[in-house]
Length: 624
Ligand SMILES: Nc1ncnc2c1ncn2[C@@H]1O[C@H](COP(=O)(O)OP(=O)(O)O)[C@@H](O)[C@H]1O
Ligand SMILES: [Mg+2]
View 1 (tube, rainbow, N blue to C red):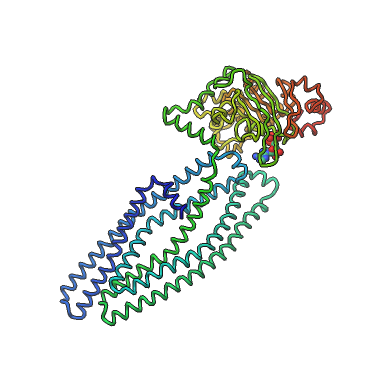
View 2: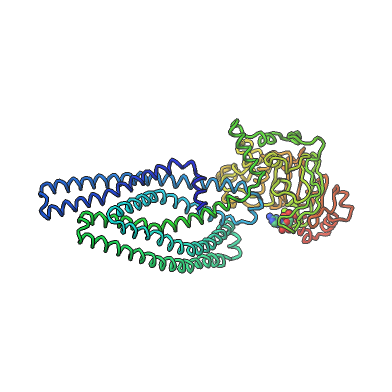
């Protein structure tokens, strides 16, 4: 229940809508209550005329007036309830919008670590279900709850006025009904939770499979994947059977109790009418009031049910909302928002480093004079508790220097990039950029200094131009084309029928690996950051294409500080220094010439290359 209150508090801006809807349902309830009174009066009039106590002409006039009153009341009900319905629709949608946007906003604030363990499709499925259930509940509740409450109170009052035992009978119905319903609900909800878990898992896998359909096809795993999917869904069939059996047998019990109580109610009304305590009109009035009271009782089970679902949904929702955000991401986004609202030209922290091309770029942000551009100081790091991936990493890269990281696959090279970008924080030690601890730097200031080309090109659906300009949405067409030319991508882009406006499919699926990588390189070129990180940036290219991209990269690296995770020894030969990694530890640091002579990993690699042992080289992610 508290989670439902949280939703009301969460969506305080909707209060006027809530109040309007409640007002509409109060009016509907009052109008509804007028009906039995009018019909009761009409019955008495008719009975009077039939019994000869009333002149027929007078009686006809009266009943016609009463019929007219009924028409007015019912028309009013029709109009008011539809107006309420309109506000209900608007409110439910606004609620869904608010909840969805906040959820997305929250997800964008969560640390990288959180995403490492969650399945995309599961996140989406859970979001959709919980938000749908909450807004559905809010809509139906706001449209019917006030009506129900008022009707019930009025019926109790009126029946107490005519004969108090009737009110007593009605009063006992409610607790019994609520008790039986909540008994039902506990088990029902547990089973519903089991079903949702299965469906969320299946949906997570579903999204993954559709996203990587090529792999599925190539390994002929369609039947296997479909089998897992249908097994999960079929298991919900069995759960549903148990769930529904339980619900309906409880409903039989519940309704039987209700039937027995109403038997007593009707017996009382009929007997007392026969005994002359009630007129015919009063009998008709009471019978109608009683059937009006049935409605809230019966929908009580629905209300409890739907509220339990909404509670479950909002728990899922608020569990994600309660995940601690990445404090630095939160601080960064808050600062950007402040800057946006104060001058409308974007935050200084985010914009400043972007406009510093070439060698002058380094150090345009405040940095400690003379400090190395990148420094790892005794860094230990673990993705998960216990298992360190990096041990005592200690190195520095000076301004304008090109440094290569070499080591076996899984040795921790990409992890070093992740730490440099502040995606994770070191367990021990510090990562510094410009002499400043990266944990103290605003993330946007840090990340805007670093242009990265990742190992997997990671593009988005949309056009090529949008992808190249991802880090600088305001870039002109010429700037985009210039970056593409330098990444040796311009020629192939122009060959597409759509050119720069060509749509490239989800994650750039319509491009070849090499094309994707060149677009990723162009994206980094356009970002024009003083520090460049290439994580096997050209691994998907053939030798010829790589050489061409390499020229662009060489030009890009000119005057910048670069960290290169290399893929070909030929690339590494041109760097200033090489750092070799072994099992997350630094093995050696030195110039290519020094390391070639030292007999360490690099020297061994060179020897392997010379003797043509490409297989062993491949283990290092290196080709001739
Ligand atoms: N997100 C992650 N969660 C847990 N372990 C990870 C994650 N990313 C990488 N690892 C582990 O960290 C180690 C280093 O990986 P990585 O830095 O990607 O290696 P490299 O880039 O040198 O090939 C590997 O053992 C890998 O299994
Ligand atoms: Mg890697």
